[in-house]
Image 1 (cartoon, rainbow, N blue to C red):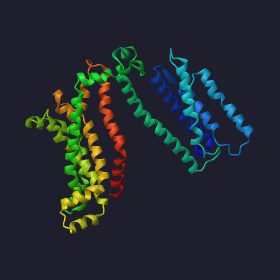
Image 2 (image 1 turned 120 degrees about the vertical axis):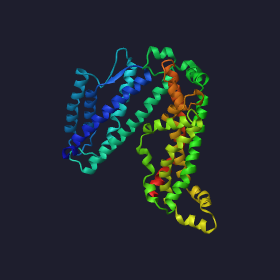
Image 3 (image 1 turned 30 degrees about the horizontal axis):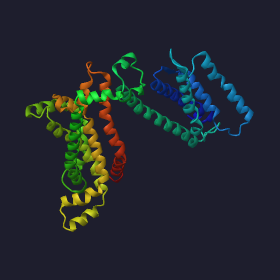
Image 4 (image 1 turned 135 degrees about the vertical axis):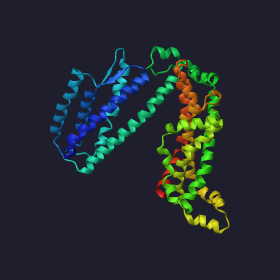
Length: 409
């Protein structure tokens, strides 16, 4: 491990990995944006990155001539691989020079420019543990941002672009994710068909109602339950507090058959009421767990003052505890809403009547050879965007509530 702390080893290693990541990203981005095939060469990209990582190490008191000689000599390696093997970014047959130039510009900008910042404190020779770990952490941080942004943004981009195409365009080139903006409002024909022919307006309304009712019922039971665990003293309190989440040790697929049989026998299958009854069963335990930690962190003296003023226990919860717990209640409500909105297994198992489908069940119905692929992607966009907007808009409340509960609890 100690030999890795030398800058002339760590620098090229970090540069090589970073350049390879950016080469793949550049090819994927430009291919999706232009519809033209591009592919990276791992060997050439690694060589360019290793050379750049070496060249961009701080001088560290070395003679300038010696430094330039080493940089010039090592530059022959990526140049030789580029001409003898394959360039770091190459185009497939029919790829235009414009797309290739854009990809190379993106690769050089993202692959080389951040390296001085990543290795700004890494010396050429032996580095301290602090200097080495700082460089590695900066590299991993940048890689994490790029990787997780890509795995979220790329599928969403493909989904949206596919929903804006027509059947002929998809048949001609399924991997072309560019769109013709000259079509105007015709780009949104699949969304019009979605609400006109597949009744997605009803699915949206049903999902909204079911999700809101699930939030209401969950809070109705979890708030007093979590308060009792956090404040009251009763036999079995500790065991109950520790076993709240045990229900999640049983996979839902194991419970699917008993639920299906019970709901069929009671006439609750294929009904919205059945969903409203079963969804809170899956959300109340996690809501209890989240809220009890927050309630424990609230000052008990405030509630005791309310009791001394003549308020009952329920009045204390309503007038004192809940107003003080708004961040936690907001985070729990958002989390429960997302669970109910995205739930698929129970909806798929219990609902057969298309007029009662939730949004996820309606999207699954579109996954058929008889339904054009662009309609399926449009349905996925309709199901994803509302909950994404809601999460991004209220994310600060969710983070504040979860953090407060975890620290104070």
